[in-house]
Image (cartoon, rainbow, N blue to C red; front, side, top):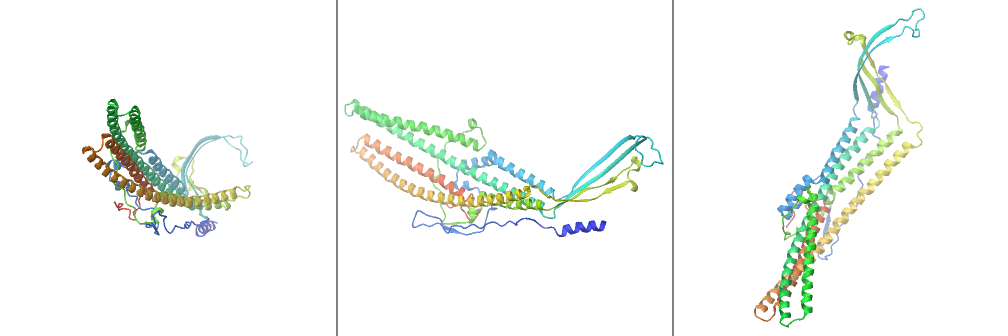
Length: 483
């Protein structure tokens, strides 16, 4: 009998298999090239191996702004969304540990101690021998072992799924970091753009004040009418109102920045600063690996792997479960001094098998649910990649258009600066009056404000492209962007 039992266990171990489909990542058709609004420039697509495990660079350092660098480092440490994502990795690891433990036997220790009296009036076991009243002490320490044989690979599939969940949590963590750092950088440049616009509007208001003073004197001397004074005063008030609106926006933006770096808004102050003068250049070729290392794509791929493994877990319910239980070894005696003698040794070992005969379709429903979850995860994975293509194409197109628009505005500003120099010379020569000079200066400042807006938009859009490409557009994770 013992030989048969051992042979049965050996057979189970040798014939063990893993139920359910093995995971294979679906193929994705990549575009041949990116669309470009310029006929002379075509940003090509270059195939490469996936790099979703590649180190993520501190991409914000390419802007060479010390204040931004410090804010990003503080965000990585104190941002609550990042802390939550990190805690979810711990949760996933705990789940993996729980599932992996099912591959090992459960060992429990226990002891039974009882002292009782047996009645003399109990039913007889031998009619020739009368019962007697007996007081008896019973001591039984034991070690119990139970173990589920994973002969179909159900537990292995469950561990496979949990492992994928851990990796998914890690990629989710990287994705949250990418999103938070990108949002912070965009908000930071928005604040700097607002500050520069406030300075320009304040300069415009000063010119408008001078112009108002000039027109008022002309009015007092009978050289201008009241409508000219009213029009200039109205223009000044509108400019001052715009300054106040921008100051309010800057305050709200600063409060949002405070929350992102984990500081209460009333306690946070961002010193004044300015926008960088240059934006990182875009390379002519963008390899596919830059999209494949996006953490959200890697997360969706791991979710797909986890769902695939759950199909095997669900299918295992069709087959019998084999359990080594209850099995124990111990000692039993009526006196402590005799407890550990060989005759007091007790043991039990057994193998149980259970098979569901009828469940009203519950198992089939579980399998269908697992298959549907996998189908949904595949669609989610593909949609994530499609969204990555869209975000990258949008960012490339927007950045190209903004760059061209900014170039035109910068050229317009150069022309206006030349016009301002000529106006100053004409004023000093007595050929133009102060009103024409002030109007030329105001036009120059208005164009400068537009140039600032385009510069800020260009910087913010460049961050959108960096985010769309998973944290950088460099093919080497350790290199910086070309300036």
